[in-house]
Figure 1: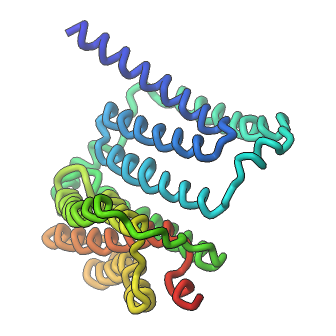
Figure 2 (figure 1 turned 135 degrees about the vertical axis):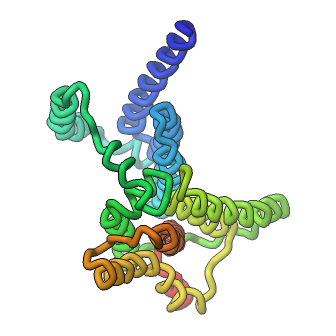
Length: 313
């Protein structure tokens, strides 16, 4: 038993040191492509760290969004920038500018450290309150209960932030992904096999989120990965799907939250207070709408510009 404890302690120590080392390399690397690769590796190790902390929901979100889709978005942005590595090497180095981010982050690190060390040794937390009200939430997964019932406003605001980010990209008139050559037979066959599997995985994560790790953000990120895979192999949405249908999918998640808030206000006299007998069904409806909106928003962010702009060119 002591040997297993010592082995776990050594593994966690190496994992923590690896995260610090990768974070430093990603921030100090001058090659943007290499920095993005280091960021993706950092995200995968961070997902492993969350699993070691018994937080599988956060680990799934980190692996799918933090490492996967965010890495794809960064690579797409790098491709659109068209950075010339030779030009970057010829650029004069300014060591003082390179140290500015560290100087700016130092007070934040000191404040976070002070906050952590000032916490009480035995903080009760909110576990008891969540457990006491879990039965009335309509789900048995405490994370889903908090995100979709007790703190539904947070989830609504997160989806609004994603939608605003997409509107910002569209308003800037970004450059869309160039249509590459047609995918070869191997890649085309692999894509045709993977896309249905990813859609099924997304549906499973949506359904299982009521009583196990999963939920709207994990399912939406997998659904977005399906769209990104299609975009990488040359697929582009038709013009008939780029107008009203796309807009409806983008707003269906936030709209479902707002409609549900007004519905509960009329029925229960309080915003986002679900009736205990119908909470499970209402949460499933919210998660289904959120999954579609999150998936469409993240895939549209990867595309870059509004699909209709490409049709006009």
